[in-house]
Image (cartoon, rainbow, N blue to C red; front, side, top):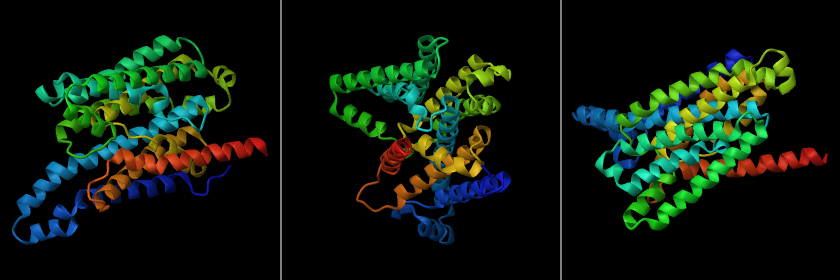
Length: 333
């Protein structure tokens, strides 16, 4: 199917959109430090204060939203191509739950208070453990075995998080855990970004390395094997790349869902349904969508700032239901 836009034009448009949202994210904020307030500070002799707000508050928030969106977008596109299932997202292999469990344990044990970076470090450790468990449980099985292993890991992690909340003797710690699980990029520092960024970048490289194999897999596993695709190597790249990139981001931002599901669906027709072309487009689209959601969170006046994970769920859940209804209609017709 011929795409409505040439591929370079699409990438240029998405790049311009991402750049514009990056700029907006640096200047848009709540009323106490919004766009006009920052301009007033700069013109009224308080430029140092304005630049401190941009550098210490807006910059890490913007970078985390963009890189987490990129991770979710490219991981979702890669998993959908690898599993040949348009309803798959990074959460299906358990990486989000395992990273969240690691962070919850940091809260529960008090490590997050004694050592601020213990929270993202334990979240990243949970994501890496997920890779080991997935490879061990799935073995040399196919896509179905991989999905079942991911569902099992997610269920165990969810049960352990519920147990941790149940046993937590401190109600303030429980509330902090619940707020973190909702997902947000508020109050994050450059230390958080610099800790997660190398892992996310490493994951992007692994996912990009699987691009050509995904094109061959669109013809089926047997056809891909006959074309020289190493299925085990491709699966390792996809699983490890997804776990490292999304897990590292989740360890810092908390759970942010549906970006990896929504973005590939919106962009797939625009790239002619070619899996390898969808990866970069979904990366740019994911970063743009999460940045837009975070900007929306800041400008909405609802008494308190909404959690970013709540907004992405409100956007993504109806879209997911629409996909299910669409798939059922296509099967019935």
